[in-house]
Length: 415
Image 1 (cartoon, rainbow, N blue to C red):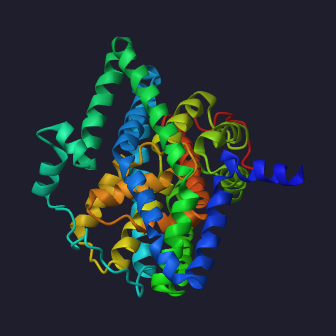
Image 2 (cartoon, rainbow, N blue to C red; image 1 turned 90 degrees about the vertical axis):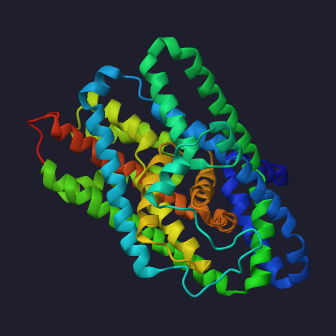
Image 3 (cartoon, rainbow, N blue to C red; image 1 turned 135 degrees about the horizontal axis):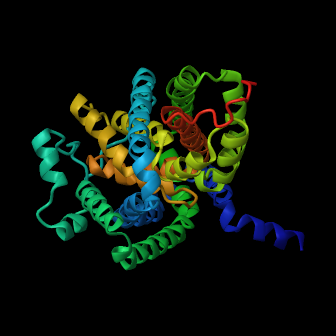
């Protein structure tokens, strides 16, 4: 009975990370103990990568549409919505700048090279102004989607979602259909993510057999770099501006943020943390209830400062291990694309792996590395999700202050 109970726990959908971690360890052992076998079974990992590629366009469409369509309260949107969205975008860009400074200082992928496969000629997508416009505005959206042109799909979906929201009740059937389609896409994605242990084990075994033990130092350096970026963003982009603008002590703010972080690190879900985020913001930080119940759910969908850390680190890391140099124009373009693509992340374990792959595909970068990263993605997701939510808290206070409603309880003392 104990064995059966343990197996039920091990194969519970909520414990996907445990299975992936176990497969990650098994893959390492196989890579050292049976290198020929490990190289031979790489096909399983290739299938897993194909499944990830298969879901890029459906996931991007669902994520972007639902992120925009979630803005339902038009009265509140007119009052604070515009400045909220602008602030979220500015925070994302600031987070990206801070992350880029750190990742270019650390260069976690330097000194470790992955041989370029036959499907990649080390040519990145055209990120000049003319090239960018020609790629983002397609003559045929169906052809663009079938060709995997993520930028075109993001633009069309954004315009489509704005039109649906502006029509209100007239477009409700379309909105309901797209929301149902989103649920279906994420359910399929969930099915595919259940295969992660097999894909991770295969690709990790192959990586160890082919690249040797040097891969572990590189991965550890990458994880450390991501965490450093998140901590820097927390203090530079969130704590400092809030403390200066809202006249709140750092100790009080960090104490409240710490309570929220305990939930985000255990759930790695912004949505699951939302009730705690709202309660702590109102009770511990004197945020106004009305604005909090608008900006925090909205931020849960489109404010992704942790995503800025994630994508910046991923782009530079991937470019370095493939021996590529990213131009200034490409980096700027990456920040803009990351701002769009991070509007909504799949609410399933490991969903960020799909968004990471879609981000790399926009610029023609190979996303094979995502399969290896997925093996320890939970360690990264704990940091990224926490920064996403703490960014919502910071933005909520700044917005409330900008409209003259902070603190909600004017007689409260700064504890």
